[in-house]
Length: 249
Image 1 (tube, rainbow, N blue to C red):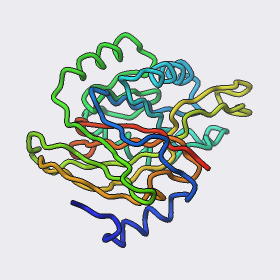
Image 2: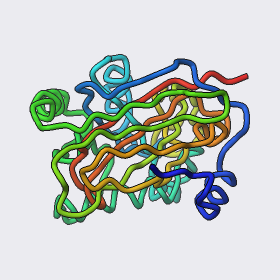
Image 3: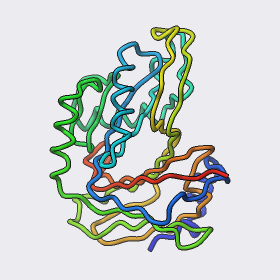
Image 4: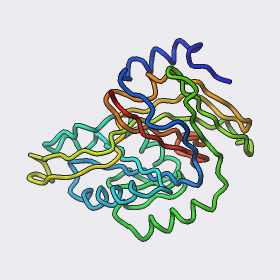
């Protein structure tokens, strides 16, 4: 069992990024057959709004974990996306290397770490979701044994060639932005499940493992949703995932 209280470096990194006001909205959550869909988008890109709407539709599905990553390389065109980050751009670049594409772009959707295509292409994405559901998945669940500690359990499964990374993501469920400059000037656009921060919290080698995480670390500053994803290497296939709500005081 990994205990984050014993890892002072991890505690320091996470504590610097998290707020203290989040508590679990539920007691236990499991992955089931949820498929992870990631959208790389920007408020500065005029091609992105249809993909943003599509992600909003996917976010309503019980069988999908839909996450929106706002990249920062459009910020020079007159409008700085307030949700953009170098971490989101770095994650997209990792996928670019894994998929061996010549350049990264928006809007891009990645399904289960195994399929990428233009984010507004609903047909291709929906087919990719159904295909990803057939892949072998590792169960991930989270329980809330006390007011102070959450416990993430990754079930046993086929041993990966290299240890898989366990990621913790914190996201805002909804934002509506009035864009005043750039390619989308004058538009009011809604965004769903906007990732604001993510951190590595462990590695999985095929054996069942448990990670104890202080509740104060589960929600980042003012976020109301959180996801845990087990993924091969950088930009590799997603092996299992779960998402859960955080109730703020």
